Image (cartoon, rainbow, N blue to C red; front, side, top):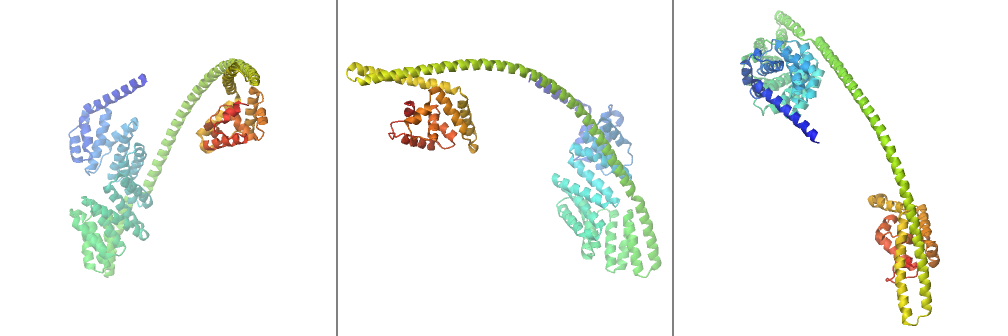
Amino acid sequence: MKTIVHFVFLVVLFSFICCSWRSTQLPELLRADSLMATSPESSLKLLQSMSLSELNDASSRAWYALLMTQARDKNYLIHTDDSLIRMAVDYYDMRGADVTLQAKSHYYLGRVYQDRREDPKAVREFLTAMPLAKEAKDEELLCILDGNLGYLFYQQSMYEQADSLYQQAERLAVQRNDSARLVVALSMLGDIGIAKGQSSYVSAENYLLRALAIAKDQQNVYLKRTVINSLSMLYSRMNNTDEALRFARLGLSLEVDSKDYSNYYLIQGMILSKKLQYDSATVYLKKSLLSDNYYVKTGAYMCLSDVNRKQGKVAEALQMEDYCNAYKDSVKRLEQPVEVMASVKDAMMRQTVQHYESFLHRYRYYVYVLGAALLCLALYLAYKRRRFRQEMNTLVQEHSTLQSHLSSQTEKLEMELRQKDLELTELYERYGQLGDTKEGADNQEAAILLMEQMKVVNKEKERLFREVLKESFIYRRLNALIETNYNNPDAMEKPTAADWEILKAEINRITIDFTGRLSRKYERLTDNDVCFCCLVKAGFKYSKIALLLCCTANAVYKRRLFIQGRMGVFSPEVTLESLIEEV
């Protein structure tokens, strides 16, 4: 016990020293990390005031690289270079000590690739980070990974995979009570439903209305605009022009940057074209062309081509169609579904190999441990077997000695019991002789003295009888049965017919045919009555007799009175015990 206490003390002391060293060596990094969640701007400024060359050890440089990339990402700065975050990835992959930091480093490397439009590489890093985040039980990071990976799949038109990931993100957001990420997940599930087509419009509407109800209670205007924009696009696809126009105008009123008006202009132009207001539609559609988004431009040129064709402007319609096809080609070049799927397969294959290698390593470890345990167990069992044999030999010798002692004691008690029987017989004869001559005070006094002697001898005889009986097998068997019935009142067990025969035989052996004498003296007694009398003769209390016979104590007392009635004794002053002693 003292050794364990010392060991625990040393571990705690070592941990304290390590924490103290880290806090004294890296106070700026600790400060930046603490500010990351609440004030990412302050965290970025603090990190920018530091220099990578100031950090002496590899762990500090890796942590700085991770925190700097994280701070830039949280401040919405576009990532262009992956050299910094690669430093963290290489360090944490090599060390593998901190799974949380290892998962974060792969996630932020994926974010760098995502900003650089290298989607296959981003997918690979996100898939690498996901099992690490699960191992670290970092639900926040898992939720972010599901969202980012789902968005990449959505961009590549891989809607089923994206839908599955955003549903996971929704469940995690609900578990963590994270309303902002819940709105994002529901909004993206709505967008995926819109992209899937008409069969998914109803579920898309439910997702988006849920998202809007949650977003209304928040101060994040960006989330509100995102949901409203999706609802406007959905109602436009559903030909609900009034709702589509209402949400488009609502979204436009919330937008603060004119660069982001293009999407709402596109929706309003599409709605007005459906209402056959071609001039107004053309104005809004041309405004939407100011966007840098190829998807918006493709939609705008497609709609303009349709408007011009309906107005009879065939040449302009063909020109708009050419522009639309050109931007469609640009969009297709941006999409890399084949490369993304190849990246997914590659990441899954690498994870499978790593899992197999990890399993193989654990398997070997378990085999070695099991082998060592079996060897120790074999040695232990051999030792225990040797000790058991020694102890058994000792017990056999002790048992043999004890049996010899008990046999001699039993023989001695039986001899004493026979002696007492002889003394009692002699006293009865002398008492009978005195009874024939009842005259004279001397004879009365002698009779009283003989009566007292007979009582003493009777008590001694009963004591010797019970001592001899206690050493018998049947007495121990009945006591064990009493204890079992006491502990298990719902599964009580009565003595068998063989038990009763053994009990009567043992009592008859010690007392010279007790049951025969009892039956001859009281001829009305049945075999069950004789067995009951044997229990009383053996000294069992009525409460224990009740347990043996599986009945209540009250039933035992009634049975006693019933047996006395069969003996022809109805006086309450005479007990069954006294009648049995007289036999």
